[in-house]
Image 1 (tube, helix red, strand yellow):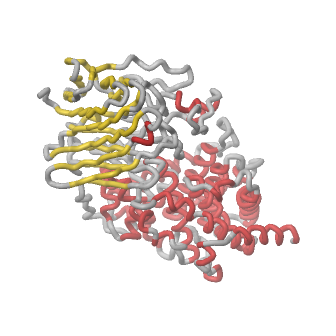
Image 2 (cartoon, rainbow, N blue to C red):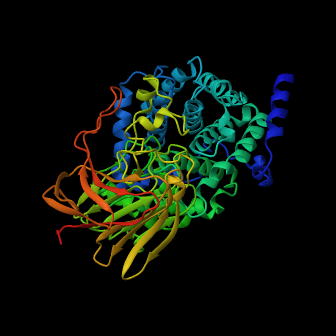
Length: 604
């Protein structure tokens, strides 16, 4: 008891700030099930498939996955490099799906299989606290099963599972070296705090004072991560990490709402609430996403967006997601059951698409997006970013862009690289310094991105590229990004301007004031198209029966180039079918130049 009191005092001392100001009322803690579910929600989820084809498809996907799990062995504690994360994610999907299946079908097989899974995980020696994301997701997994199946579990199983949540989940957060997420301003904060809150809410009765203090500590920490959405709703880590970090932020706030009747002020943050719209604009007409930083280009329905739609009473937030499901693109997302929960409170029969053609956000990773329409896969799509290479999950890509027209993605971003593959090869992957070997990896460094280099030099990792102007009118849409700080060692001034005219024809103009040394400025673009140099100033791209001309206009000495194939290291992913095209511009010391590249299906 003395040890427990000391732990409670430690946690209480740390639980200061915004969360304490919310005056959480634990006397109103809901009975089990209290995580995510309010009275009537289970019945609403059961009824939803009968009135929504999309919901019927999602429900069928979950049940089909559960039927596969029934015959599968429970997860085992098998590490992948330094991570247990794939096991934690598998456990979360299995337990969440099975718990949902039991609540909506009352088929006892699903509850029994979830119980088996939770007992297996509870027997692990630990949940790998040195990589705390593993603990966060595993704690959430067991907390959901413990709570949703509380009346179905035997007392013995509840005791084993509850003890595991406390000992291997909650108490792991006492190690400040492992639990650095409390100080983080990124997705680690969101995922790990969500996991701890789930564990503490689910097992609150076992150690009320301890759980209360831990919840308050988590909520005092969480606003540090919420700042990342400021000022406009963009998410600095990109598409995939919005799905991850914000998905768990939604899980966190939704559990507070159901269990304690409060959102702890999270839903009042305007930039956070706008971020679901950011994700809508991040999806291109091709159905692929704008995959800057560590994201793949694939996209599908994102269940967490339905919380925003329900909170805002705005079905347009999920109009693109509903399209994906109608196309048969139901994700195998471990949080998929929240689609059924939040969609049950929405009228999605008349969900409309956005009307604005542009999105702009500033903040840690400034982004400009133009979308020529919302109904045709041939619509034009252009997206460009600023930011700095030293940011979390960043690549060396300030000023880089993607471009789609006529149903073809002409300018591509290669996206993420497998972390474990690089770590096992000894790459110091998370070293973001200027001399880091991280930037030697083709997908992460400057060579693969659609931007500029001076004499092949790396960008300045701490140089911030800001959006300095943007416009959206009947004549044109465009943006200017100041890249000067990115090239501080080489140039006096560099500003990149992208503009689309009323016919959606793109022009990118770089205004450059060279530094004290002569330089070859490389204008690069990665593409999957076949490429041909037509003349010194023109490159012809062909793909899927379509063509696109890149036409250079400048008074400087310049020539069109198709770069040699990159020489990959043995452990790198080889990007087959991708080539880099562009122009080399040779500038004398102090020379000023305007470099204009136009994109057109016709040569003239």
